[in-house]
Length: 303
Image 1 (tube, rainbow, N blue to C red):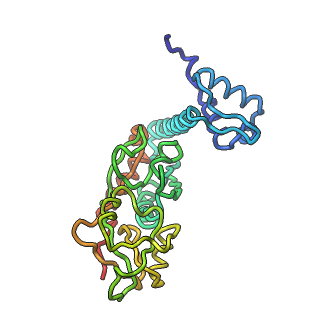
Image 2: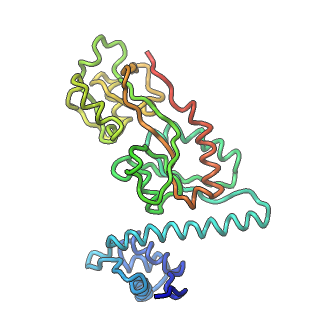
């Protein structure tokens, strides 16, 4: 059956899908959009009819996307973002103005603390019209890459494991290959005998095999919420930790950092975006600054 223009969803219909997903219901979406609830319902039914799938489960508690709806909403966010970029960059090209507008960045905590600040300073100096908007995302499950896949971020600073683990439709570029090191209270004679302090984001596919082969590593007795809490606990003498070097940037003098020796695990950190957004001026500008910063982003061991 031939495809017609009538089968395409219009931008205002995409905005309705996103609003319903974000608001968790038709009534709340109507308020956010300044429409009536019946208009929102009519728009969603029309979208479902043309797509040929139920996009939201309706109930007393509101509406939540079905698997088909989650896919449609993610694509809707990405399409709407591309339309914004199309307008901004076309106007810039017509008037000769520099790139401007928001740049949505998702990053895990240690990257946001230690990698992004100097990068954003240089980005603002070179492109004053760009408005970075950073969200710190726990690097669990889909992490920062999932924010890009869902259309909630233009670019993600993420840990890169197996290529197969990257959400479909994304492209990734490595920035840093950072080693793991042993962090322990300074001056301790036998740091490997200390209790282990760990956190949920620490052990990914890049460390699992190495970790399993280390019979000296005990089961964690303390599990912290993030790497900052781990550093605080180690600094206070409560144990040792095995951490990537980006997390150890700026560690206090009360913490000693020791190389784990040959075969030590490493963590690859990179930027993730969509093929379409990779060509946008703001994303290209950020990637240039990230690449320029990457060689000096991770320091070596400190004794």
